[in-house]
Image (cartoon, rainbow over all chains, first blue to last red; front, side, top):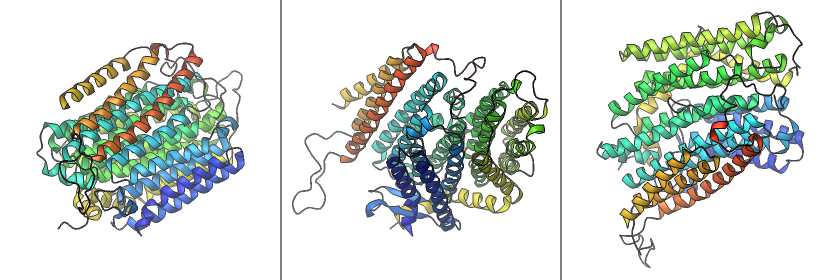
Length: 496
Length: 127
């Protein structure tokens, strides 16, 4: 069964190659990309089913025994993330079929999208630190090109900022990998976990841990390194922004959680306290940025940052309950945020703009869209019984258990402001009467727009109304993370 | 030798960061290149230098005789050089496109993405 771990990667690689070969035929490309993403959902579902009961699947590439070869590992956390990536990939591809113009498609939009998801899945599944760097570069290169593809001046500028800061982050990551190898002589994450625990908790390891925190913090858009995100995401077309918003920052969060639960756990009092206050700052600055803006996409971009704070908060508290909250939050957030960017794209197609001042009256003209916006928006705000409520509830509960009441107050206050700015979009774009003046050119929206939105909204409802199985899966995944012994035994075998 | 390489790494990082903070787009790209090469040298140096001892296994043995040069950092650097080369090529092409679009290579003038008063084009493609 261990070959199953590589299946999502093989599926994405195959569909990107075939799509690349059909570069000249748009419709065929679309069909291949859709087929590939459906196959990925199936593969990810299979992987998730195999790991659901807590089994950890391990594939030693080319049968080189760990820690010498490259290891692919699918524990429950990784499988959940691959499943989420597959869902976002499929919906973004569906939305793209209805929106992406011929020029972008001719320059390889769909193969790039497949390679991007390939890189994301690879980063989730790898058990080797340098291999993680390589997967990061795979997804970054694809995202760079998608970001810059076919754009005018704002998109080029946004792409430049995105590229420059992510390259700096990669250099820091690479430096950290080099220094860690110098100290331990291994790159296998399970082996690193053992070696770092054996090494003395001195300044060297903490410095290396901080290098990783900075590198992944840039990718995850944590305070104070988030500036590239609001400068770039809103310039890209809606499906691209949705894919990036849903997935890419979460790869950074995933890497943070993986590294700071498996490897750097020797000086938790120091490292995780830093993460704690960075999380609070991330939540607060992100939500304040969102409240200050009046453009749908900019508001949503800033909300990504504030939500990242919640996810890393669970890591910082470092209890099984808090990590379970983080994992549930990531799942909830990926689905909801992707959907909100889709809806923003439809708002723009119907109203001609992202500016709230020039929008209005959509609840009257498009009541179904209003409902479809209401579900993810108020889930993001944490209204029960939608998924965001349970995600926030678990985290707040974990913070209360740890007696971190200041942090708890910030988390609740930020939730209130999130609700405020979601209400602002709802009131301005949907409830208030349509503005006078000549109507903006409207593009209309159809099957390829509403299907992914409705599908993701349905998932949000399922996550909310039937939260129990998902919460217990998140708890199981968190237990695996808190007991690295199981991961290590699965990779390296029983200790002699 | 280690000291010399360590100093080189430090100089590469320092000058790379300095160039990143300059306003000229070309200098930013050069700064990124210096940083990447600094990181490569860092891996090479930090993993330890062994002169004139390739990791070759003698006939009849199953492991090379210590001390030998560790081949793993070199493999890492080789991979990182290739990746860094590709990324720098892309960054240069992107910088050129930004220059063509905005008519400037001053980083401070690239503010259309931050200023809320500047709207994105009303009717674009791909929305």
